[in-house]
Amino acid sequence: MTPEALLSALNWRYATKQFDAARTIPDEHWDALEESLVLTPSSFGLQPWKFLVVEDPAVREELKPASWGQGQVTDASHLVILAARTDNSDEDINTWIARLAETQNKSPEEIDMYAKVLTGFNGSLSPEQRHAWNSRQVYIALGQLMTSAAVLGIDTCPLEGIDTKAYDSILGLEGSGFATAVACALGYRAETDKYATTPKARFDRGQIIEHVVAE
Amino acid sequence: MTPEALLSALNWRYATKQFDAARTIPDEHWDALEESLVLTPSSFGLQPWKFLVVEDPAVREELKPASWGQGQVTDASHLVILAARTDNSDEDINTWIARLAETQNKSPEEIDMYAKVLTGFNGSLSPEQRHAWNSRQVYIALGQLMTSAAVLGIDTCPLEGIDTKAYDSILGLEGSGFATAVACALGYRAETDKYATTPKARFDRGQIIEHVVAE
Image 1 (cartoon, each protein chain N blue to C red):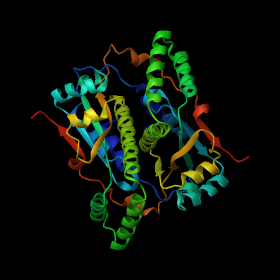
Image 2: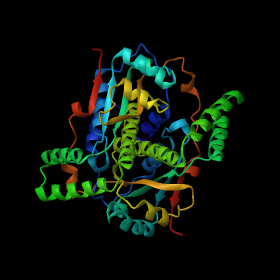
Image 3: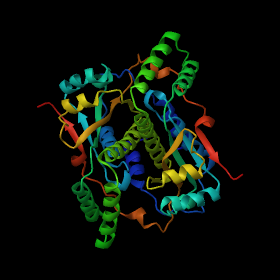
Image 4: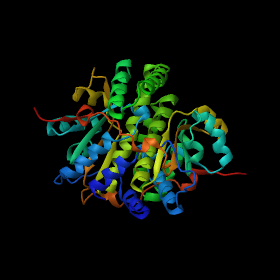
């Protein structure tokens, strides 16, 4: 992709308020977006997450009041809930290490060293810190998902202003070891969405990017 | 971009361990990556972040021991530190609201309502929660940056295993209202980096993506 094409896609993207409820993301595009979630990088490769694609319209109706009544929840082609693991147990880590060993054919010594570093780091955190760490990883996935959608010409709306506890209850996440972090609606903007043509508001680049140069 | 091209880019991406120190990202590409940071969506549009592009080789040398000696810090074409605002004051919010009003030509009533919702939400959080909230936003930027780089054919390595306090000290962030959250090295993989051809290790899609369908 050229830099111009990337910038064009990122400028085209906006937090879509009204989706065209009649349009569905084609299977091949949706498959690529699910794969973008799977391929999201995470700290130590842990993937401390679960992504729920809510296809049941009744469940989406239930989620709407837990989302300040935002229409994106029911009208967008797809709705994904990005959930973070609430803690990382030694078993979680061992499961991951086993997967890594199997995939990458590493030597037992390499695997053992990696496991020790990971277990040591994980153990140095409190359960709350581990949940917060996992939640931050989930936001990498949110970023990768929205950027991937934009370059495919698919609209998104990140949904952070949701009642995550109500989501957990509706989605049966309570006691599952995962908790809702954030959601994202995906599909196609309605022609009537006035926000599509609202100028993008950002601080000037010079206010947020600083170049550290030799004095 | 086609779904195939996107997947090809995301599969090509890996956490680059060895960068080719002789190769520099061309200006036009780097400019697009900076703009991808500027254009990153954030909760309420707040942009509670600062991005430091460390061009001074001496500073990069200083950061290296605070990064477990990882060579990416000095060898990659570019190094970005992604910092989160440590708190959101009423003044920060007012600055943002003023910018929004100026850019989007909204009515005073609309602006006032938005400001109230934002101030109310922000005030409902503790300072620690605000810092954590801001840090999660920074991870959206990390995701958007890495995905944008991948589609441009530029390599990245996210650097989370860094001594963020030492980074703050070296970069003069202490007392600035911003704190290092994570860093990212960008450039081009060295031909000798064996990790480039190591199989990508991920859980099966079925283990991390769940479809919520009508029963």
